[in-house]
Structure formats: C-alpha cells, structure tokens
Image (tube, one colour):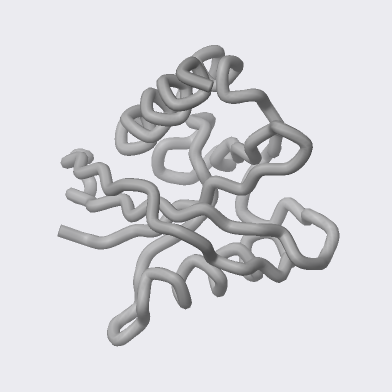
Length: 130
C-alpha cells in the first residue's frame, strides 16, 4: 500500500482544493493537494516538498488530521492528511488544472477522488459542530 500525503490549507475560513489535470490518473477529480512519499521521507517532509513542487509555495506542516485507505484500480493508497499553513509564494498550477478556496460546507459540491471523500466528510462534520 502506497502512502500519500495531503494538506488541508485554510485561509480566511476557506480550504484549498485542487483539480487534477486532464491526462492524469483520476483526471478532473478534486483533491486536497499532496503527493507520494519517497523512500526514507517523513510524511511532513513529503508534504512540504510536494506543495513546493505542485504550487511553488513554502508551507509549515501542522497537526495530523486523519488517514484514509482506498484501493484504486491502479494503486492501493493510505492518505495521510495534515493541516498546513501557507508561509510564502504565489500559487502556481504546475500539476493541476484549477484550484479553489471553498468553505467546509461547499466541499460537498465537488467531485473528489475516493480517498479524499472521508476527509471531506470529516471537515464538513467538524464545521457543522462549530
């Protein structure tokens, strides 16, 4: 099972989500940005590296939120989700077609990849309690 990281980046009460490029596996699906761990890499280091590669932004990786396991046809994964804080840099689309800043309640309006759906449900549920 391949470990993959994902970031929940919040700004002004909204969460960053990204749409996968056409031609990619899961093209058109929305996700919390991140990527695959390299051998010997910690999840936090992976997430920091992936956010720099995908968007050109410097981040601070915060608390672990949850993990989600899903067996895609092409690859079984364990998604490790962390809070992340944007420190510097302008968001560039290196690996995605679009990004959006949405409220927790708006997350349900997007077509997320299967491994990300439990994260969506967790965030929606947590915001409903507040």
